[in-house]
Length: 437
Image 1 (cartoon, rainbow, N blue to C red):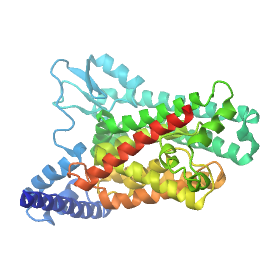
Image 2 (cartoon, helix red, strand yellow):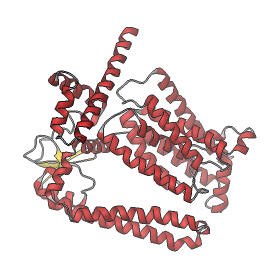
Image 3 (cartoon, helix red, strand yellow):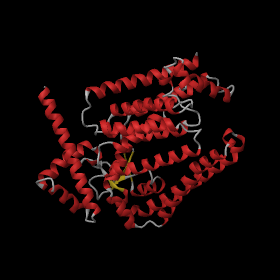
Image 4 (cartoon, rainbow, N blue to C red):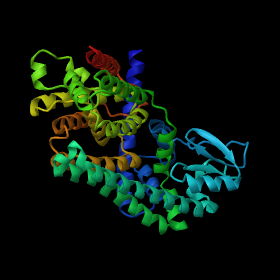
C-alpha cells in the first residue's frame, strides 16, 4: 500500500513538472511572436515525442485543470435546434428567442448551439448573433455607467448627514471607489461596445481557455463557500439584532463590536475566545464589500484547489491577520477581511501555471494596490495590519499547498481543514452566544 501511494505521489509530481516545463516553453514562444499552434507543437517537441507527449499532457494536465478537458464544453442536446447554456442548465429555444436572449443577457450567456454545431460553442462564433451581442453590450454598459454615477451622487448628497462626512478623506475615498473608478471602467467598455466589429468578436472567441474558465466557474458548485457566506450572514445579522439595532442603532453597533471584537487589551485580560468570535462576524459598513469578495474568491479557490485548501487558507490567514492586528495596531478587529486577503494571496502565489489563472492574478494584483491606496487614504477605517497579515499568509500557503484539487490532499491538510471548519463554526456560535448574553 505504501509503495502504491509513493508511486502515485511521484506520478502526480511529475505531471506538475511536465505541465510547468511545457507552460514555460509555450509562453516564451508566444512572446516571440509565433502562432499558438506552432508554439504548442514546438513546446511539446522540447519535451520529447510530440504525439505521445501531446496526448499525455492533455490527458493529465486537463484533469488537473477541469476547464481544459476535451469533454468541456459538453455536446448539445438533441431536443432543440437552437439553445444556450444558462448556468448549468440547457435551455432550448428558437433562433429568434436566442437572438433576444443574447441582446438582453449578453453578459450572462457564453455558450449556445445551432443546427451547424455538434457541441456548445461561444456565442461570439455564431454570425447571426453579432448585432444582438453588440446591442446587449451597449445597453448593459449604459445601465452600469448610470448606476455608478447614481451611487456616487446619492452617497455624496447624503454624506453631510452621516458620520463619514467628519473627514474629507472618507468622502474622497468613497466617491472614488463607488463612482469615479466604476464609471471609468464602464465608460471604457461602452466605447469598446460602440466600436465592436465582427473581427474583434472572433478574436475574443479565440481566447478559448479564458472562455472555458468563465463557463466552468459559472456552472461549478462550491458548498464550502456557500457555508462560509451563510455563517457570516447569520452571525452578523443575529449579533446586530441581539444587540438591539432596531432600538438604538449607533449604540447597538458599538455594543456588538465591543462584545465580540478583538484587540490587545481584551486578549491580555484573558478573553482569548475573541480570536474566534471576531472572524465570522462583520462590521455593518464592510459586509456589503466582504460578502461579494468572499463569494467570488471562495468559489475560485474551492473549484480549482479543493474544499480543504479553501478552509485552511481562509482560517489560517484570518488567524495570522488577528496576530498582525494585535501586534501592529490598537484597532478593534472585527470581520473576515484577513481571510479574504489570504485567498487573494493564495491565488497570486499558487503553483498552477495557466494563462487563465495568470489573467486572474492581474486583476487581483490591481485590487491589492487599490486597497493599499484606500488604506493609506483612510487608515483609521481599514484594518491595514490585518490585511497585510492575511495577504502574507496567503502568499506563503500558495507556495506550500497551492496544488490543483485533483492532487489528493495529505492527511495533515485534511486534519487542518477539519480543525479550521470546527473553529469557524465554534466562533460563530460563540459570537451569537456572547451577544445574546
